[in-house]
Image (cartoon, rainbow, N blue to C red; front, side):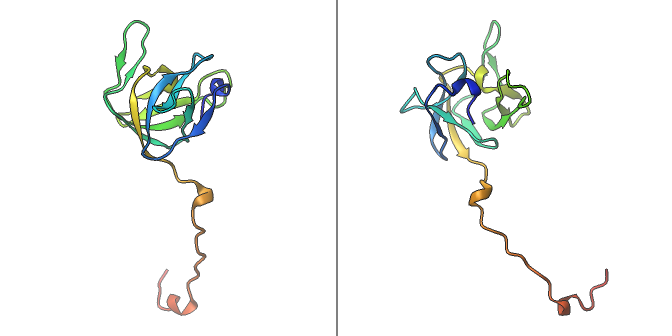
Amino acid sequence: MCEYSLHAVATRPAEVGESLISSTFPHTTTRGFASENDPTMAVCLRPGTELAFENEVMRDGLVFHRRIGDRLARFRQINTDDPNRHHDALEFANGVMVMVTDLMPGQRVIVLQLPADPAEMPAREERTVPDEAIVGLHL
């Protein structure tokens, strides 16, 4: 997903194994992820996407930049009931939650894994247990 304020920017979905960079985009104050090859296109993540940052993650603070203390994160969407707030967030392995728009620009990240897409999962076979298999089973 991409933040509502990035709808004026060209977007595409993330792919496993690709390298992204935290970026700002023209005509918006929202930060997100872009491909290193095309920094003008926002790369959208689905909730559950797992990421590994090249270095310890830094976020903007009011005065100083802050270290997160971790490099592994899972993309989440929060505050979805409030259309006037940002929703894209990263939940780090150490439990820290950071809004994507608060990340310092220029940080490199690798997409480790995308969440399973239910539409692409094979159908589960319906299995029944024959009556003869139940004989002798004490419930």
